[in-house]
Image 1: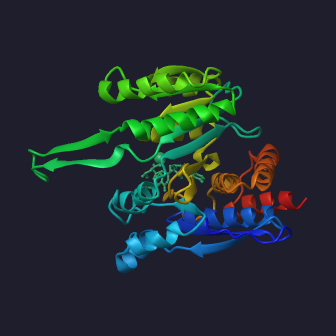
Image 2 (image 1 turned 90 degrees about the horizontal axis):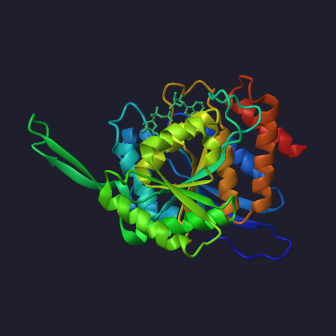
Length: 354
Ligand SMILES: NC(=O)C1=CN([C@@H]2O[C@H](COP(=O)(O)OP(=O)(O)OC[C@H]3O[C@@H](n4cnc5c(N)ncnc54)[C@H](O)[C@@H]3O)[C@@H](O)[C@H]2O)C=CC1
Ligand SMILES: CC(C)CC(=O)C(=O)O
Ligand SMILES: [Mg+2]
């Protein structure tokens, strides 16, 4: 970490890489930054290093993410990211070349995605009950690892493969993280996979869960197939505490969970390098939302809650809690009203000033 140790009265300084990215990422990130700044007044200081990365940069000079830029990012304490992806550019170029490249290069092996139904939010479920679970998604392997290719590309004989990579060390560190997290919560882990079909990876995930679980006798665990999980997220979301799953399944069910808690605009995430070797990266779970970009109507709450996760990761627990409390109060009072991106940000800032 680049933070320095000053005198007892001096606020600690952290260096934060800021990558607003594309579409609504550019609109919500300033709101998150302002809230972060306000919540930490007198407690910490931030040196923001803006990185001009994403579609505009790529279209301007062809740069997606060079090794030099990556080295600069590695020097920071944490990364605040908006969203990546733009319809002007072929799908996958920025998602793989920028977003996944950062997650892999910085060994963000935990993709942490809380889902909480706040009072004041309208869930599409008739009787949602209490929803408060966290998805621990493996972040550097699985079907996103980039293993695969094509024969006879571009012809009607083409065969395309995408290979799911699941290494025992990669799975074990994720499983351990999930059990540690469960110890701080309601002590229940649900492994989600498709072991009735994906028998190689599925059996390994289950074996490692069974082995690690022996070290956590207080934590109960069960198993659900991914298809059944999509049912229970809608019919009985209260059954979940910590969901543990692989990269693709975790991506899909967290968008579903986001919808269930009122929209992905409320869903924060952290791409965590839990070993502390590299900076972790915090971003909403959603994408660049080209369908609403430029209108100033994106919900910045997920970005603001992601900033709270960033602060918690840096050990700034009290400001993180203040942001979460301000968001909770904001939603309780105004969650059902139509507001601009800036207005939501301002309302949360005002609460932090009270
Ligand atoms: N982490 C990232 O940077 C991610 C990037 N993407 C990229 O984003 C682009 C768009 O992808 P989509 O599949 O459309 O997913 P998306 O998450 O951007 O949008 C899905 C739907 O949710 C709505 N939505 C998203 N965020 C919102 C917010 N804060 N407030 C209100 N409504 C919101 C959008 O308007 C849209 O109707 C693609 O290029 C995709 O690859 C997608 C997911 C994650
Ligand atoms: C755009 C993808 C690379 C990632 C994604 O959808 C996600 O992490 O939620
Ligand atoms: Mg996604």
